[in-house]
Amino acid sequence: MTTGFGFSSFRFAAPALAALAIAACASGPQAPAKAPALKAADYAAILSDPGRSDADKKDDAARKPAEVLDFAQIHPGDTILEMEVGRGWYTEILSKAVGPNGKVITQNPAEFGYSAPAMAERRAAGHLGNVTDTTSHFDDLKVADGSVDKVLWILGPHELYYVPKGSTGLGDPAKAFSEISRVLKPGGEFVVMDHAANAGSPSTTGGTIHRIDPAIVLGLAKDAGFKLEAKSDVLANPDDDRTKMVFDPTVRRHTDQFLFRFKKG
Image 1 (tube, rainbow, N blue to C red):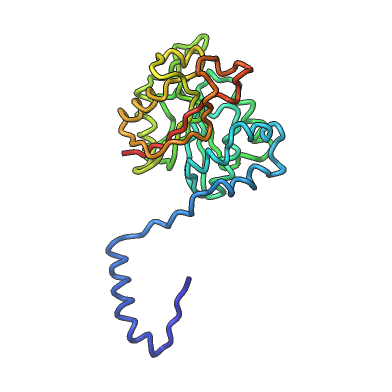
Image 2 (cartoon, rainbow, N blue to C red; image 1 turned 90 degrees about the vertical axis):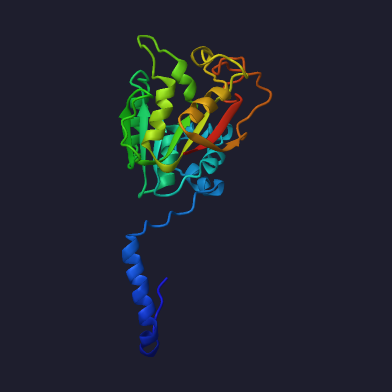
């Protein structure tokens, strides 16, 4: 918005304007205000985009991406690190959500060899123009200090306790959470979701049934200096007894899942 002054009024306003200019110079350049966070309704157009594959769309009802990303409070222009990107199902949505002035950095361990071909297919379709891929273990992120607004880790922390064949592991849990804090800007947010194991379950469930006790994630986050901002039960399922392998056809896509949002302290 611009404000106009007539000549006669300007000689009275000039001293005040000069004072404001001096104050602005003294305080330095001001960061531009962030665009409002996208809401669930804003994701409707992204999810219904005719360029989005039918294979992706068929999982929307079970995965509820609009509700999950509404909880994550994504802003256009954000820089987002998406950990354990997998086949890029969320990446394509995030790429459109942050828009041309934002960017998405993906991370995947080299052991997850299925990821690269899937991501290449999405790139070939022209969907990931603002996405940069990185390959690393979870405790050695290839991202600069304090460079991202949000870190998203969807259905992933249990992998810290999974050892793929031929590997010695995918990263030290405490160091992985410390790395997440390192790459976040001051006040940045960490959004994490996973398949829930029963309270008191050992961390080894991450490598057997691919679930994790939410208390383990909360403890790792607290030790890394994160503060819990909010939690959501949008993907909770009380009918899941939390004992089955997540790929069991009787529970697949319908596991009891926890969703937390933390702020860097």
